[in-house]
Length: 212
Length: 212
Length: 212
Image: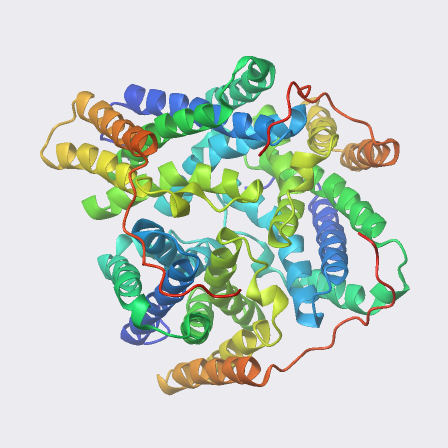
């Protein structure tokens, strides 16, 4: 059924994506002062959510639980977080950094897998973005924060742009491994630029303050 | 496989449902002072959740991402919300109003699709209610509120009644387009009556206040 | 396709699991002072989540909505909670107790069903744990609490141990009904021991207090 992107590339995009999203979940858990099991559980939840949502939306059984390599990557991320966290100074920075890498990898892998299963290009870009956004959204909900994707500017946009790079290349006939990697890099760069320069998207102006 | 309700009716029920749930999500996002992308993302999340949950529970791939018309309806709702919101005075009212319309449309379309795929009548009514409730529940969770369906009386009940009207008509052999529309209208009317008259369901009486 | 565990045992594990998770959700709703419909809705949500997640991850349509017995068990739990709650003194204890029973039953039934559908033993244990954890996690999120599985020690561990007992027995060739029951009992015992003795897992030591 899959006859698209180089399977080895797709596997690695997913594996590294699972690992870095696991790091972002684990660091957020350390920051929230969860115990070692809480860290590993949140790490795994964040690592797996994106891929599970992607596969459910495409309509295939989630591959995560079929393949021990994903399980190993997520577990390793949780363990690394718990033991390495005390030596990391700026944790919020770490969460954002790994989240941005994962966003880039997952938006590209999600979009590519969607194309492989016959979805249209617009749908593939959207599905890629959802794949990238899902893990971080659940991380924030479980820690009782309003999800970053709703609060922060330039979170959904880089995911859409990164997926679009990969999809446009495929639609143009290229199965090169470079365009997905380019898409992931563009997504990461735009996202980190937004974090760094605190780029703000337009917001409805405050007309009057409600007492609520 | 589908041999039930008029497909055109089902499409329109879903399209209008996606659009009005998108409006309810987008208005709630404007109210929470999210930026333009947050508004569009929440709009899309609320618009799509019900239908995705419905299709996953039935066991078919979610149709949302197969069909550009749903994507267009959800995107339009987000854009409309961001630009029209400043001119809307009573936003909470708007969220509730569009939510109630969406609840009516989705409980009927969910129940009808469940029947089409061979679920029993009780299951179909429940699945219709879940379809209607899902979007608003996720909207409230993402904005860190206890979901309306848990707090407010007469939220689940109208969804069950609306779905029941559609299911009973089908079980009685009618494939008329009027009964689903009647079900949606009954659901909407009961829900809005509950909002307007603040009808309260019995609650366990406070016996003593705990200090926690 | 299913050729594994005694189907009657699996049905009963699931039915009792659905009922006790329904009790835990309903009691938590009573505690949060939701009205009668809120109690029944939260009861049903908690009762069904685990099994739905399990079936989606395995890649089969969720069986919950195909079988009226699960619906009856969940509905009964909600009604029992609303009417019996005033006579229950220590509600938090009740939520934890029923949650622990459900955790034991679902981690075993989830792991067994995963084996039946051809997943590997490690995947089956993990899927069992997710089945057990899912319902309580959603209950906590909907009531705006950080999920127990993230906060409390010895929540994920008992679920993994219970599932492992069932899986190891199956891998050793035994289809006896006793090992799954043993797994559920071990999970319940470890979980309740953790609750009772407030066993604490290691936590990253506080190095300096941040002002945030």
